Length: 257
Image (cartoon, rainbow, N blue to C red; front, top):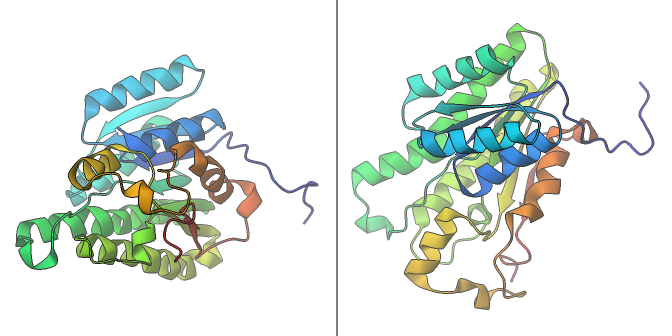
């Protein structure tokens, strides 16, 4: 086996990526970054109008993209989204499990319905999608890359009122580790990114509720999604061929005390 010097290509030509939660925030940025690196991108989320606008933008820039309406709490829709992405763009070789929701409540005040929804979207959905994408890769004897979006909350909870979110994201980290072992021999890499506080629709809602949390951070700022580009591209590109079962914390020092 020979490698280029340096072995750092981020060329995704010929790859098909499925990005969940692509209608806003980090997912929207991830989709545009993957498309700009040559991947065909399937955009999945509930808000179809936003997905269609993003798909049109990607196509206008010379890329390939399709919009797929998907409710992350519906297992049938999750599986159907993978099938639709494959039918329209080819076998999904890159999966970015980005869709997620906060809980924003004290644990003892949460309804059972909210508990179920947080776990369905943050844990059950990425597990189902990962298994469906991996099954199709195995059937076709092809390698693949799965990137789960965890959170720095997986490693640190200050008691501010999002305990279940922290638990769910810790589950995503462990899911990443376990599935990496499950599929390593098939050349399917499973990794995670654990962002700190980055600008997004979800973060905007949090800041509206609790105020400017950035002043408690060492660098006194909220991250820009563009600062995650290089980590994402590393984990889905040839450069990280030997990296699997890893969660990369990108938190600007926010959670290190």
